[in-house]
Every structure is written in C-alpha cells, then in structure tokens.
Length: 205
Image (tube, rainbow, N blue to C red; front, side):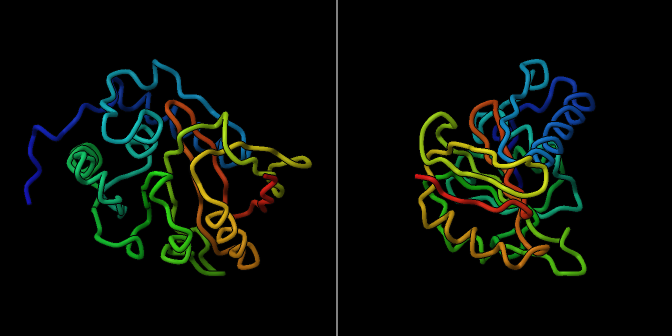
C-alpha cells in the first residue's frame, strides 16, 4: 500500500548533523550500559515524533536505512510510524519480529516471549543479533536494575517503569548464550539508555 503523504512526519531540521549526534549518543549508551543520555533540543529540532516519541524517533532515523528490516508493533502502525520511517530512511517493514533487525514496541505491550522471537545472531556473527527498542513511561520510577559487565566498573543501577519482572527474567535466561543475544535500547521522552547483550542483569525490586 502506498504511504499517504499525510502520514509522513517531518525529519531532522539538520539531518546529517543530528544523525551523527544521535548515533554517537547510542554508541556511548551501549559502551556505558545503564547510563542515561539526553538528546538536546538542537538535535531534535524539526522532528515530528508524534507516533514514536522524541528519542525513539531520533534513534530510528539515525540507525535505519534501506538495507535494514524493521518490525513495529500494531499500535505504531496505526499511528502512522511506517510511513514516516519509510519516507525518511527507506527501511523495509517486515510483518514479524523474527524477520527484523530492529523491533519497536511500547513497554506495556512487551511480552517476555519477545526475546526468543528476535534474531540472536550466531557465535561467529553476534552482530547479526537484533536490536529491541522499547519506549518506557519513566526512568524515575519503577523497578531497579543492577547491571554488571563490560563498560561498568562495578555495578550500574537503572530504574525502569513499565516492564514486568518476567520480561527481565527472560532476558537473564539469554546471558549464558553470549556472544549471541539482543541489544536493548530503552527510550523515554528525550532520554535513552542501553542494555547490551554483554550486560548481566539483577532485578533488585
């Protein structure tokens, strides 16, 4: 089906500069698991984020291209996200998470079983694992995660609201399969944090 121009939101006001800034923010978040990063208003300038939220929209515009595949949860389809992202990135939308290099969903709709649906790469090519991007209600409330592993001196705590313990338990079950696994990017408003496949998680409360 041809995308309606009415569904195509605006991209970055300064695409090259903003994409580089967001890409660096994501790399820094992955290198420092559990640390919050805030995207500046200058970076987000011009961006129509109605369907996705500011940080999540920015991350997708920075990371997606015509060579990548994307799965979006149903409410995001209904909000017009596919048209927006196809227009600005050329990404190929796929019908199931199993087919996707990137999967996007909201916290209150994220089942624990989604981890096993996503591509985990292989021992020889762990970079083929998918990236799951979840918008959460808050980084100030919710359960506290204690993260350990590369990029963390001892332990890094991160509060995340909206994801049930079963979600984190399912993620913990994947830890013994490293280097295979799924990268997780959490977004909330203009902020983001990453939980890469190399991180070990303890749910504190």
